[in-house]
Amino acid sequence: MRHTHITISQTALAHNLDIIKRHTPHASIMAMVKANAYGHGVAHCLPALMQADAFGVASFDEALAVHEICGQLSKRIILIEGVFSQDEWLVAQTHGFECVVHCQAQLDWALSHVPPMDSPTRTIWLKYNTGMNRLGLGRDDVLTCAKLLHDKGYRLILASHLACADDKDHPANALQIKQFDDVLTTLKSLYGDVQGSLCNSAGIINFPHAHHDWVRAGIALYGASPVADSSADDLGLSPVMNFTAQIFATHELPIGEQVGYGGLWRTDKPTRIGVLSVGYGDGYPRVVTDAKVSIVKDTQTYLAPIVGRVAMDMMMIDITGLPVGVGDTVMLWGDDLPADNVAHWANTISYELFCKTTNRPHRGVVA
Ligand SMILES: *Cc1c(COP(=O)(O)O)cnc(C)c1O
Image 1 (tube, rainbow, N blue to C red):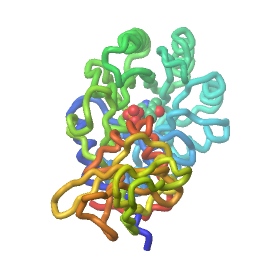
Image 2 (cartoon, rainbow, N blue to C red):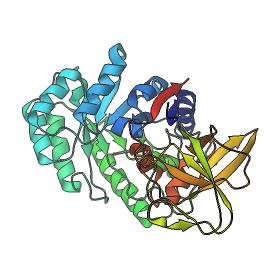
Image 3 (cartoon, protein in one colour):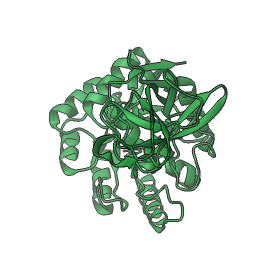
């Protein structure tokens, strides 16, 4: 068997949810499980997230998958981009999904097909564009929509999204938070019990005064850092995904030999090369700079540099002088090597690394 594994720790996931709860004792928590739980596998993750108050997904298919797994537990499921057609709006009602309304078409469907009073779909997450300029209605349209929806008997949750929450001192944050507070206060004074939801993981950490009724936790659940100035470890978050492979061949090379496609890397000393059973076909990024893997051997942890180009199925590491060889396990990211470090070497973010892991690694779960 080719030894390439992605193992999900449910303990770590539940622990991270606890950490988030400690940051926000009063707000309800929407656990973001879109994109197959950020590539972790929604079926493996949901059992560890049952203490969350709701699940957030991006598409109808994702909502159905979560619905199926939750079975009789009837968890709240929120479509964070709303529905994409009137048909979806009607089917959302039959399943009790809650929807964002961010545009005129969605508003029209909601106004012309009102679900029964006791339907969860009777709650609308009204999206207010406070400055990210991605989804949502401007201030005046939000106030108009809120009135129309309220008059039809909808319960309202005002939602918006911070563009720069990872950078606490970015001036956009204060502006967005203020605009959100103003409209929420207005809606509350007009219609009573309107709720608010503004913060993602970074907002949860950086803006405790802006949590309102609902926070939407994503990357922090999966154990990567959402903020620029603290590591996941600093925040007490544990990696949920352990991505490992195996050294399955080694070579002793003299000085001046090339390694891998394009011959881009050359030995500048007698070098021992280890070949790993993992490549971009498994989801390791093809382009990395000064990247390393972690190898634990006899309680010692070694960091071995990746050399030459990452290929589809394999990559090479420099193991000169290390007491390791064929059969040893290496970690691409996880407990011994934060995904945030690999993301830095790949000039991306941990979110993308997780989402791009493929179905080829053997996937498993540990309690
Ligand atoms: C994905 C998403 C989140 C979660 O963001 P993280 O940075 O992963 O915590 C929150 N809100 C919305 C609208 C999202 O799309």
